[in-house]
Amino acid sequence: MIEAQRENLNVNKLIAEKKEIIFVEGDMIVPDSKPDILNTICTSGVVSIYKKEAQEGKVRLDGSVNTYIMYMPDGGEDTVRGLNTCIDFSENINVSNCIDGMNVISDIKIKSIEAKVINGRKVGIKATLEVNLKIYSNEDVEIINEIQNENNVQILKEDLTVNSLVGQGTTKIYAKESIQLDVADNLAEILRAQVCLIDRDVKISYNKVLAKSEAEIRIMYLTEDNRICTVNYKIPVVGFIDIPNVTDGNLCDVNYEIKNIIIKPNSQEEHSIYVEIEIEVSCYVYEEKQLNLIQDMYSTIQNLNFEKKQIMTMTNKQCVTNIKQIREKINFNDIDGLNLVDVDIITNITNENKINSKILYESEMELRFIFENSRKQVIIKEVKLPFEYTVENLQNGESLNTDCNMEVKSKDFIVQDGGNISCNIDIQADTNMYRMANINMIDSIEENGEREEQDYSIVIYIVKKGDTLWNIAKEFGSTVDSIARVNGIENRDLIQPGQKLYIPKFERISEGNYE
Image (tube, rainbow, N blue to C red; front, side):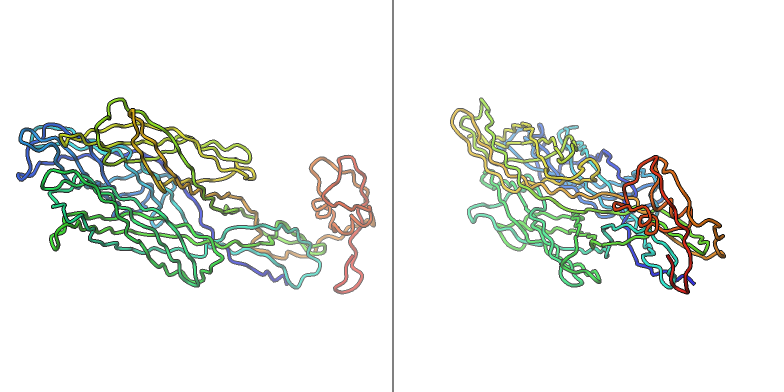
């Protein structure tokens, strides 16, 4: 009786990827406490996703865009005022092969956002969101990796290295802080705010994953004496995720997503702004598993029936992190006498090109310079800087699945004479890479009577194109060892079409002893 020894493999399958542009629109009525709008100066926002769900044939997203509008008031002495509103949205994105209960990883960015004046007391807001979805499904697979109690069974094996899913989990982190302002700044209102998660890191210990990053908050505000000021602050974001059987030798994919955000003047203490951010952290932990996988088998004396099946699994998983330094000079002819208040940076990957041993990313930085003149008016200047980033020293780069995330690590802008601005920007690029491989499996082995005994002692066989020693031995009920020994073959992977081979009969000499 054949006894099969089995090993468990947990496959995390990428079922579908979907990139889509969605539009979020809404109107805002100017509160009675604020003056009429003459025109808008600039609009910014932070997107939050408070619910996402895989459903039959689609993914449902529920979220909001926290919007900040800087505007020029109609009349009066004020030169700039600010509005803040939150626009909710619900969107169903069609995704083939998606079913209830699958895991959804989302990366959603504001591609553009604008506010148009409808009348002095009403503005229309339109945000364009770039949505990147990945839908995963987990499957536990039992693999036969050894046959016991049958000396006459010939086995063809292949060594494989795969990435098996150890486990997955999520946690929610609440980052709260009162950001102190200069004591001379009596806060009138918040003009704009930006939030981004930087310096992401993962530490794995036994049964736990420590996910940590920093929420970088950049706020521009107006004081009661009509000054425009900015404050930058970093709030630690730290959370533990319990996953059984996780060890420090595992690989971990972590995704951060802002679910909710509150930024408002602090009512409890003067000269401060209260910030509260709800962040969901999800992670997938993989182990690198060495498999000695049975590809084919036969018995020299028994007929064996078995099923063959293929599964798709992840291999060669790795992450490459590099810093891309950008040193550029930008010239504006009309900024003499202006004060540089802040600079927004958005990075976009415009093209990915995989060539043999490297991946070339063609990218673009969108820079928005915010200036203030002597009359306390805000002037916006925008420019785009193309740049390239390359990941090198790869093997068969064309077959890699890749996901590159770029974040601004540091920035410094120096205003020089003649309208020149020296831009020193460091971008951290994290490129996750893996391959998907089809692996063959043997399943459901059954014995089906004795194999018909051949009436020859030796056969002369002429090798055909595509033949292997294994296939020849299996056809004649012989063994690879016997054929190689009789024909003096040293390299068993090298036989040529037209080559003459002597195929010996596999004979039973005594119980448990064959040759």
